[in-house]
Image (cartoon, rainbow, N blue to C red; front, side, top):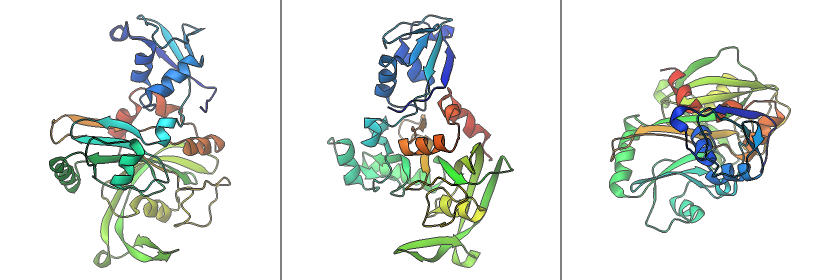
Length: 314
């Protein structure tokens, strides 16, 4: 497991009295969705309670305890196999590894699902990592597609992009359509209204690095390659997206596009409860961010995802 030297600091509150160390960290470190990764960190002596190393995940905490954990946003065996982030009787959400095609049969094999037939609710590009939803029943598939058509599913992406931003946040809006091809793949770009479809993306800058930036993106529409095209046309292409850019100012380049489907929020059509989930970053994303001096530690803070989406442009 890849580790960093920074420590995350927490204090046990009254409502958390009696929690085990593992349960407490699972609650606090929402970006680390793998329980095994947290347990492994504790057993590897990466955690301190009241200044002393504690390597028992079952250790009971009391109100007022201080807990420190080394930053361990890391790739795990579960993640590389397609980690399950959310599951109930109707829906399954996985953290898709980059390089995996959005195919229901292939995904079922990847996660070892044998309880029925899964159907894709939506798709991600092969080289995009992150949250992918699959329905377990026909009625759920239709209900989720209806939510998508009504724009009631809110998706949030993280991207490492070329260059720095002077503005903190903004909106990109234009019309997108086919512009040509590259190595047999269709290239999209801005076109006039008559020949394209309206595309809207909200963005917010989170961190700056060496000739690069970390952005959170919320596509309000679902056009093909929308985020990739919008960022390229802003002059800040996604690092590693060689289909849309050949020349980057950033000196360190990855082998694939640094785009991660980070979070999803929607009202569950069957239970009527809000679903709000986020998925941990892939190891190559973290490694590149570290090389480019982009600080990812805030992504580990409690409720960071929920707090951030409230600040996005409406």
